[in-house]
Structures are given as C-alpha cells and as structure tokens.
Length: 291
Image 1 (cartoon, helix red, strand yellow):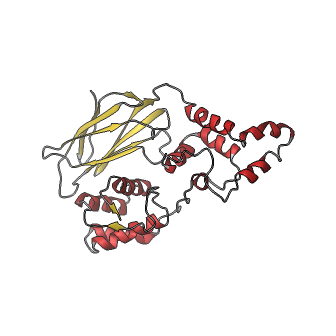
Image 2 (tube, helix red, strand yellow):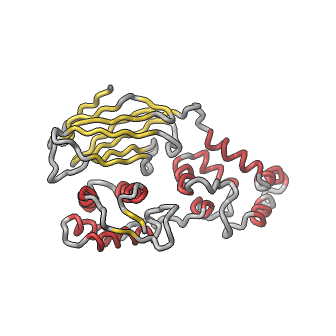
C-alpha cells in the first residue's frame, strides 16, 4: 500500500492511500482513507479520477464514511480511459486532496485509437479518395460530400453498438484522434454531429446554480430542483445517449448527500464540470431516475 498523508487547517481529510502507484487496462484501483467524521456538514466523500489533460473525469463515486471516518472505493480501468499517462485521484470532504498515479494500456499501444479508426476509414470510399488528394486536393473532399452529406446521418466510422459519447471523449482527449477526424471528416461541423449528438450548451444559466443553492437549503422542493436538471438534459448540458425523447426525471429517490453536493457546487467548492458529471453519473447509475 502507498500512503499519502494529508492534513489541512480544518483536519477534514486525514489520509488517503492507493493500492499501487501505476495501473494497466483492466486493473482494479483500490482507494481507502480516513476523514474527520462530520456527517452533519459533510455526509459523503467525493472521489474522482481525472485524465492527464484534466478534461472531465473517467470515474466518480461518493462514499458515506464510517463513524470512525474510514472509507474505501474501487474503480476498474477500461475503455473510457482513453489516454496513457499521469492520472489524478481527487478526494473531497470539505477540502480537496489530490495525488497522481500512472496508467498504461494493456498492449502499451498509445496510437491504438488512431490505428483502430484508420483502417475503418481506409476501408471506406472516403479515405480511398486520399490518393486523389495528391492530384486533386480540393476534389478529394467533393466525393466525401456526395457520399457523406454533412447534415444527413451518422459518420461511417461510428460503431452504433458503442455510446456516442465514447467518440466525443476520444476527440477531446486524444490529439491524434482529433487530427484524424478533422482531416478525414471536414464536412461535419463537429464530432457531436458526426456521432449523432447535439453539442452541449457552453454555459450553465445562473438560475440553475441559484436553484441548487435554494434546494440545498430546503427553500425549494425536490421537484423544482429536478426541473433544473431536466433543463440541462433538454439543452444537452448533460448528454445521456440512451435518454428517451421526454427526458423526464423522478425526484423520489434523490439521496440526501446529493443535496450536499449541490450546496458545494453553489458555493464553487466543486466546478461546473464536476457537478454536471456527478449528475450524469447519478442518472446512469439509476439514482436519478429517467422516465
């Protein structure tokens, strides 16, 4: 066990440990630690794992600590871990503690993303137009336009059995993959359009944060708070690929610690992305229920 001691002026996080300092694809990452137990103000420990470029996160969990302050969590590495390199473990319980660890693909093949998608492209008539590029640079994009209208359908490289968000994450996290897409599919306005998603709204309206604060203080009821979440779903601030057309939620099973999470967000203790991804995680796990 590798132990990372941590202390703060408030003494909220006492220590955090990882089961190893480096992991490979398919490994189980075990996290354990101890906090200064304060269930009234901090009912849950938030544990997140961020990729090397700190864009969003690859895993998140919230654990209610035991009465002695101890807590533990496990994460399995997998396909959503699209980058090799230094990942960040972040533990929040009033204050935030961070430490790093290394992650490698099982076959240690960093360009696997590019190679896996390039054969698909080469098998399509689109990439076969690349030889034409050498003689007709502009004409090479014309066949793509005629065979892949930018406003019609999903791009041919997309595997419909996969979550479209998988491709968005790879585009945002892997420079080689981004270059490959931009070079081969210039007629699509964005990766979102290519995989059949609508691009996310860039900024969360201020009234949603106000709602979160009021809900955390029990000044508005659960249903009113859920309407703010529904707004973010309908405007693709939160992207859930398997969502039904109605994008409706029930508020019957929202745990109390979600209220605490909303309070942290309203006070800027956690970022917009962390709050959005936490809600997405709760929806995907069935904690917030989509009708």
